[in-house]
Length: 368
Ligand code: PHE
Image 1 (cartoon, rainbow, N blue to C red):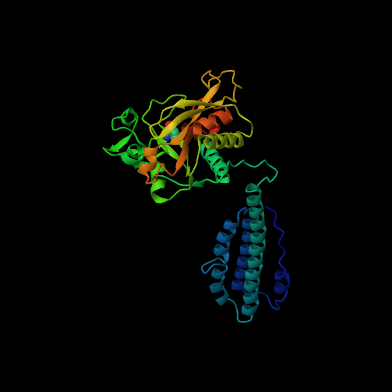
Image 2 (cartoon, rainbow, N blue to C red; image 1 turned 60 degrees about the vertical axis):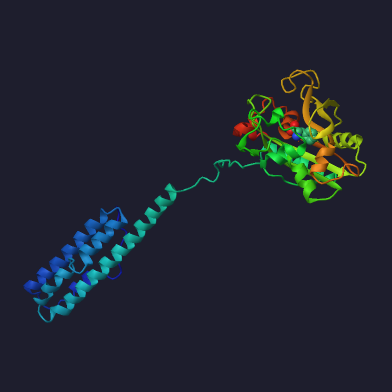
């Protein structure tokens, strides 16, 4: 290391030339000792590379029991005349060393800081790491889309419980006591008369009990069935129930509403098919099929090669159900439907396996 220190306070030559008389023996010793310390310090400083080593040297030379302090007893042996001269000499040495230490310390600290900055430097030109954002599940998105469309058509949203009594899920909906759907094969029972709802139709009689016609509600939510899991059915799925009760509600109103809804959801005119079907809580009842838009009716795995996909059950509310809800069937009529959201999503996005909705693979979910 190169010392670039030339302290202004060092007046060695000048002080020495101030002797008027020949110096005493002890002052010679002192003079030599001062010169030795100065030389030694310069040597040591020239090989120091770290700021923390300077601190060590500082203590060694200028500390309480340092080398400079050790000169003080020698001063006592000088003549009274020499004493102030050497006192000043020692003081100058102190100032010289202090300034040397400080200068080098500053120098080294700066260098160390620069090295540290260089090591910790961030290359702002490097491409950033992409952070991935969460998004709504495709089922929820479609559920919300369907809800928005139906709200725009005058329906309000009601929610029924997912853990339900056998009464609202079955009995109030005109299911005969020994209907096969009630069987353990289809229903997850919690107790003998409590179960996980198998459809959103459980909301129908609950709504009738708490409001008077006209009733125009939808009830979106999750349902459960104790079925074998396959590409087309799952134990968990989502439905949107629709219920409209008023004077003079007709089957044509139901067809018109469904057609209008599906047209808005898929943003195109769709071919639909209505097949007579049986549900205990509607009369007449039907299944609604949509022409498969994945294969344009040619047949694919989404529509099981039939060209059609069943998306909803629907029908006119059975008079017994109206009675269960305290609505007079002589005065009012109503329609109801319940469509499966996953089925609609399969059609909308060409998804071939319903299980993908529940596996939650990021690769699948991030497509939507
Ligand atoms: N709840 C029926 C089902 O889950 C669908 C449906 C709802 C049918 C309303 C008719 C009327 O299959």
